[in-house]
Image 1 (spheres, one colour):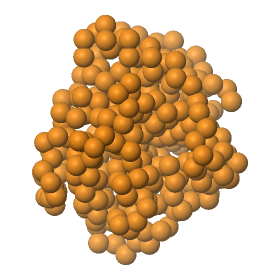
Image 2 (cartoon, one colour):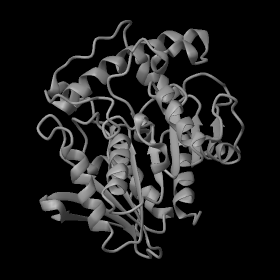
Image 3 (cartoon, one colour):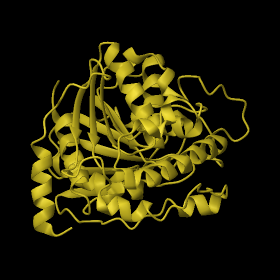
Image 4 (cartoon, one colour):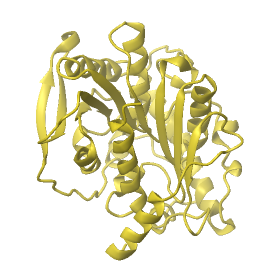
Length: 347
């Protein structure tokens, strides 16, 4: 996108305020539709239009992990530091990247869990967007190199992330949790353990298009792409993407549990079934055409109906993993700007 057009769109998005959506009660919601409403952003469209009808996602771990590699723009921010560190809390050895400005001034830390369907991803994948977030966030960010499945199956990634929370609490009073996709699920799992074990109460939850349930009915209401308004000539692409993600949902659950007899309705592994009062402050950001959108909306409504502080931002034209389009799609920068503002607020 030409820089001038990028800046104009970024300013347009900045000015959009919250609205009331009848089916999402007691949730502060912001719908940031495109000017060409209910159509894919051109950058996303170019990627997804290659999907064939009835796509068949290969259940091959090497190919699946290769699919997590993205050509993401990495900018350098002179006032942002990145340190490679380890924690040994809980008898574990867990690597993390600490990302922070030279002038960190608050007592807040954000623990971030990367996406990657539980079987892929690294904290280095988060640097393009977390370094930008750090330019506006007054605290420090810890990006966790948790153990991935199937080599380190459930609940290893959760416990690794919990150990980094304990490490961060040595230096910071207010701990918030964040993650994208599968990392969002791990963040919610860690939050429950922090509460149940009496370690700490999590300040805020910042979730980018999280998956919040395993073992759901792929023919049910959480996966019904017919509920999503879209231009007629793009509906086939949307349906193909949903079909692909239903397969991904089953595959990632298989690797995450790795043959263990796990109750998939247990709230630690499927936060949709968790006690909502644990999540006192939550912001969920997702794309209009993300196959996880419907489960995200079911989750955030449950939090709102429980009387918690629930916010939901939906970006028109975007699909899953939109953070990977930083520098290409203005909505990504807008999402990070709003995230920093949310984290910096003392309410």
